[in-house]
Length: 245
Length: 108
Image 1: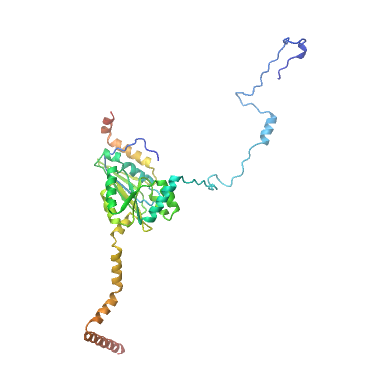
Image 2 (image 1 turned 180 degrees about the horizontal axis):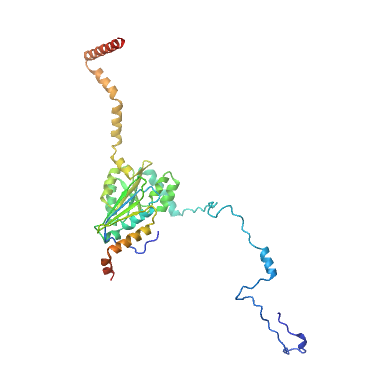
């Protein structure tokens, strides 16, 4: 009910009316669910939200635009360093150290430096993002937890293994030697291989064995040689005679 | 991963911890984290006689943590489907149950 002031009962200005009707029973905020006015009901029905039809469940298809975060400058510098490390050094070994203190590290570094192996630390995130882009992507599962890199220009596996045996906390996980990924056992067998020159010498001697025997035979006394050849001819003729009969 | 409830790992009742894993597998993360927590300086300083032996293999086998206690009990945890927190809580609960007297005396 709207508030009405009966105008008729106000003959003169300024007089208070005799009856005053008070508005009641039409509050907006009620404790119960107030039934909507029909007009409001119609409006709500007309403007109802209809979502676009989904092709599948929300997680079925991956999001189309993947947000690629740009590397911040420190990461770029570290990546450049890593790139240089991988280019310069032939052998890169990944070792996990759980709890070696400063003096152990110092002793280890000293021993390794005598053989030309340097110890490098890189943050795991940088390593992983670098490896993802480079050829060595299969090394990325090795980089978890506290890892250290042992890099050296010459692949000196034997000395490295000896030094690592001295410190119990360091565990060799794998190595990349001459662009080949090796496991721990691979590194062990690599260290047991003889050097390249020895292997080459063995190969050469095996190939030239036949020619060297002929050469030595020719170099002996010619009478000896002619006797041998005569014997050989006799044997051949006797064989052929046996075959014929 | 967040650190467990107690920062240090107390190895008083442990004789030997042998951890085997193959680092090229994808399920070794929790085992390696467990190893890092157990092999840290603080943990090792609680018991200098306890050996932590790590074997790195390449045969696609599951990562296994084998703990031998001082009274001969063995705890074998296969870390392929476990988180490091679960492994650590299981290990610590057994440690405290094995060695309650020394711990409670130290706490009091």
